[in-house]
Image 1 (cartoon, one colour):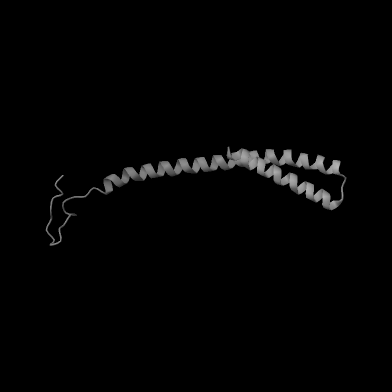
Image 2: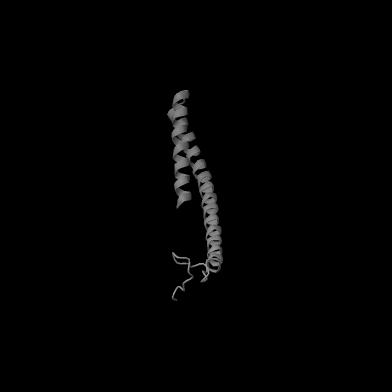
Length: 99
């Protein structure tokens, strides 16, 4: 989905830029539109490739972060085990958690 959005955005940007540049240069309308259409098609496909790369990078990063978080979660369970020595009341007496 994102690759199509990026592709279409780049295509429309190329089309409008080509039309404006052609009008500024004083080219005939048929030449302006033909060049703008070619630029739109070319930049659409370039945007599809860029969007695909971005999606792949983001998906891979999310997968690695998820695996890292799961691995840290496994380590935290054993590291956060609390013994009776760690639980003290206000007066400093060691109390059982009652579990």
